[in-house]
Image (cartoon, rainbow, N blue to C red; front, top):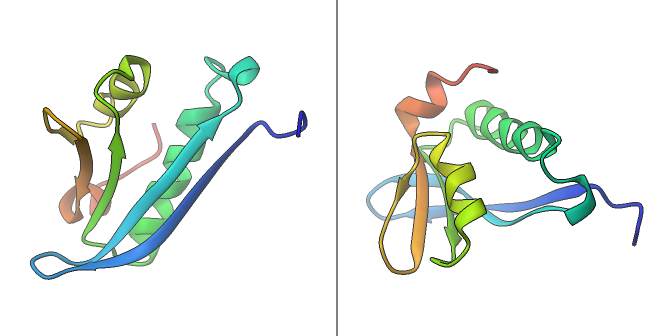
Length: 100
């Protein structure tokens, strides 16, 4: 649909070690709307949801060739691994989150 600007799909998952976590399954900003701050607003909303739901972590995956996405997530001080890139924001980061 050409009317879609962006969207985020997430679900609640449980980690044996970390407890309740928000898993960001998909995070999309339509190509013609990128670089307009929409991704930042969407991701900020995800963080606010995680904070409200008292999540212990936000997690997602990003392919190692997707440099624009990797750079986007790094702006949030997220931990990115080297292979299948698993990102996360800790409970402390969620608790300390404020709008930028």
